[in-house]
Length: 99
Image 1 (cartoon, rainbow, N blue to C red):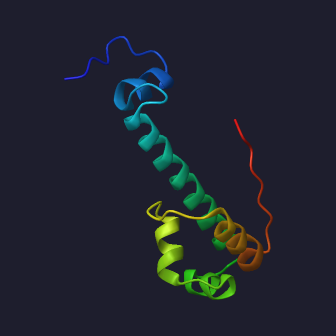
Image 2 (cartoon, rainbow, N blue to C red):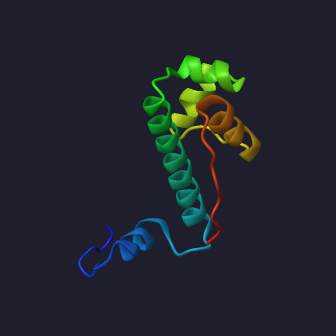
């Protein structure tokens, strides 16, 4: 049983639940978070463009099932594919920030 009594910040909670930065469990958690964020950004942009998953897939040269997996944070994605989906499918540019 985990002790939440002394938890004061969100970072402390994440560390208790998923381990310290750099550990295998924390890395897996962080990867999942990033996939979730990308999926939510994709879903929002697609809806703003008033496209179905099928329409976006056709414009981007991929499959509806792939768009669905990405939007649900389940699929691993290559950066080149992500660029193609946003630029060709949604007429949007994307950028990276390294922290």
